[in-house]
Length: 250
Image (cartoon, rainbow, N blue to C red; front, side, top):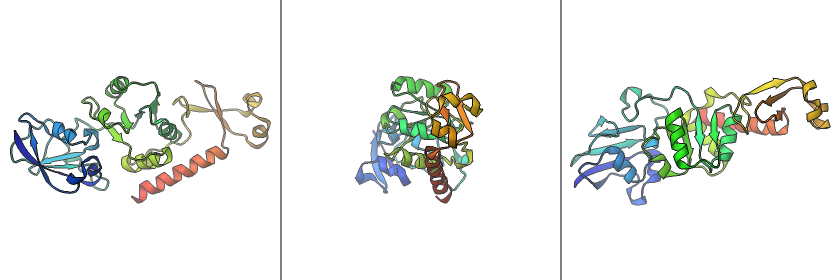
């Protein structure tokens, strides 16, 4: 056995046992233990970690720990570009698209509302989600810590909030999504692109009140739903404004 000293910063402490939060602590490690193994053994999913320093040097997850090592573990830096220091992932994602697990259906719909490609199926098994993340380079959204610890999942977010609207604002802040919003361009049900359609083409498919008060419509070719800018649209727009304002002020 070897012993290393650990210190976790900011929100990573939420994953630790209470007696280990916001302080240095020594921990015995197996002789072949890597930084990733020990970070996750202590309860922190590797997808939540952006920077690992061992004895002051930035290292990757594969770094073998030695007796006396001092390990500092950091989450994503919001206000400081540390790209030249990063060693824990081979490369950043070029596009921001998501997959949500079975308990994130409400969040998936709201992300689609904001224009973010988000796969969701409440029948997805963990193995299927893992395969899709590896194949497509999607960011996993979940409250399942063990799923985030799987080796092939390199990009993911543990969602702390419990309600979909709060979850949306949380993800906006953590991933700086405000600059990439394209609201009401994706179907909330199918995750496929919406396109405009002439009013005369949908007259027989919409209620009389809608025909009288609205003139602009869009549709999804997959599910054939018709969308217009009614009260539901206004509520969703207000939520987006709230999340974007919170993201820019944090």
